[in-house]
Image 1: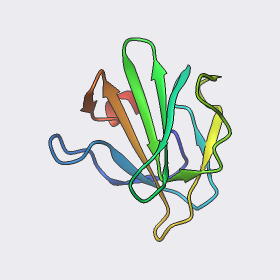
Image 2: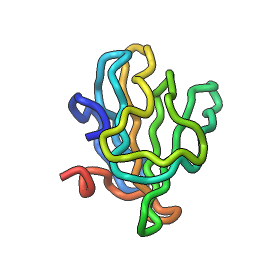
Image 3: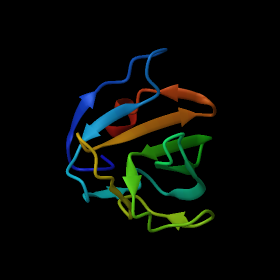
Image 4: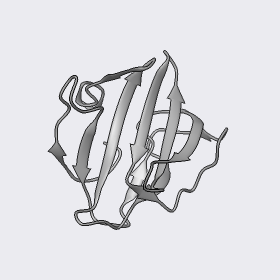
Length: 111
């Protein structure tokens, strides 16, 4: 799991791109697997989004974060803290797994 918490919104093919994991604001967000930081961008509300590229054309996407501790091009290892959960009501991490450009259920990778 990229953050300690419980899944509060499940993946639904065609409806959601990922899962939401409830976590206290300031909780560490960890890389789900070894990879390279491919992008750090912002959504329309200016909330940071971090993308990590992994082997096998897999991407993991982390949103609802702040205090990012890595930069584009950095190599990361599984379990490495990459950011913190952003303060919100409620606070949660939005987590996606993409095979190429297609969103898939992250739980299949987390189990």
